Amino acid sequence: MEEKRFTDKVVLVTGTTSGIGRTTAAAFAREGARVVTAARREKLGESLVEEITEAGGDACFIKTDIRNPDDVDSLFNQIFERYDRLDIAFNNGGVSHPHIPTVAKTTVEEWDEVIETNARGTWLCMKHEINRMLKQGGGIIVNTSSILGFTADYGLSHYCASKHAILALTRTAALEYAPKNIRINAVCPGPIQTEILERAAKYIPNMYDMVIANTAMKRIGDTDEISGIVLWLCSDEASYMIGKEISVDGGQSI
Ligand SMILES: NC(=O)c1ccc[n+]([C@@H]2O[C@H](COP(=O)([O-])OP(=O)(O)OC[C@H]3O[C@@H](n4cnc5c(N)ncnc54)[C@H](OP(=O)(O)O)[C@@H]3O)[C@@H](O)[C@H]2O)c1
Image 1 (cartoon, rainbow, N blue to C red):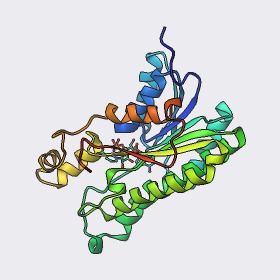
Image 2: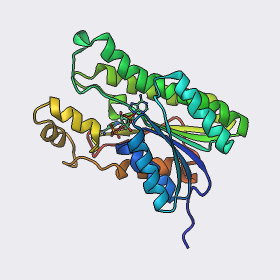
Image 3: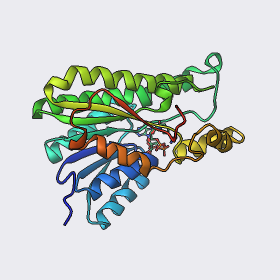
Image 4: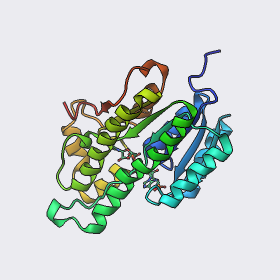
């Protein structure tokens, strides 16, 4: 029988009610991990746990809004009460704003929602993860940035700023904690077929056509084309890799 890559590892995945997080949590479970899933929408979160459990895997859902420090405290308290460790964390939960305001037209509410979810939410989770990993002697973290973490796009200043911040956090933390055996990297998806794209398509006429035209491979990616890379980054095969981002974008950023 083929050996599973993450047998008995305790893995946290945020943003598991849809898209990339959902597919990645299921992939970790298939590889033997005990997966803690977190997001806001309870029914969708629990439905993934049912799917994983029915397939013979091990998962739980903890309702969490990563913008809320009390929720994040509670998420990690529950993880440590239940498992007393955390081997791997995939900080993936995030939002974009489908309405695309230019810099000067962005409202404080739009700015705060995106920055507080993506940048501050990722940092808050990392803070708990790193403190725990320091106590237990190591761990692995992957953050979801974006190709907009190193480029720009019209009407997405808040999103670009948040994803640039995630790359800066990834690099800084990788540098700070490499000597403590904590390995931190990021994945930068290009256009992937999820709810974020579906929401944007409602506001931007011909969005899919434009995105496909700007992508060398002339297609939008699937969530399992990201999850495969995330699992690889968390595996021993990536053991000498820290503070880096991998773009998975069908050639959009070439
Ligand atoms: N799809 C793409 O083209 C693309 C490209 C580059 C980067 N990304 C990034 O990939 C990540 C996953 O997005 P996706 O494409 O899979 O889109 P998605 O299907 O919309 O998934 C986003 C996930 O994040 C969760 N989330 C949002 N706000 C949250 C909050 N405050 N607290 C906890 N969880 C929250 C959502 O769950 P709830 O609503 O239930 O909380 C959902 O599970 C995001 O960070 C996104 O920026 C996506």
